[in-house]
Length: 75
Image (cartoon, rainbow, N blue to C red; front, side, top):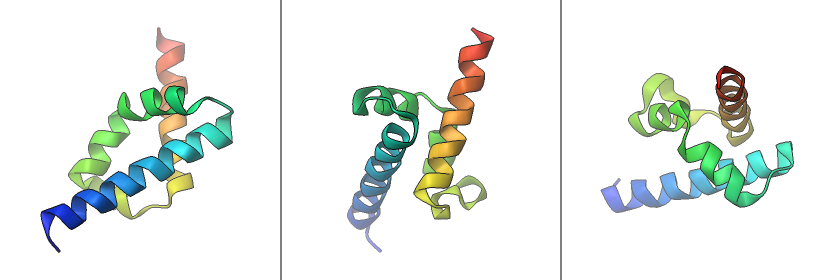
């Protein structure tokens, strides 16, 4: 698979996860995008750690939301 193909697949997955966060937790797409890209989980997905990129979009949305909630509590 070429790097361009991988990039397209990653971009589509990112968009689906952001949409899941928005729909599941009642936040705007802009808020969901900020939550997604400011998470540690997104870095692990990009690096392929623990095969997170193979998990379902809803599972990853839940993990990112849980991380976001923990971060909010520690501020």
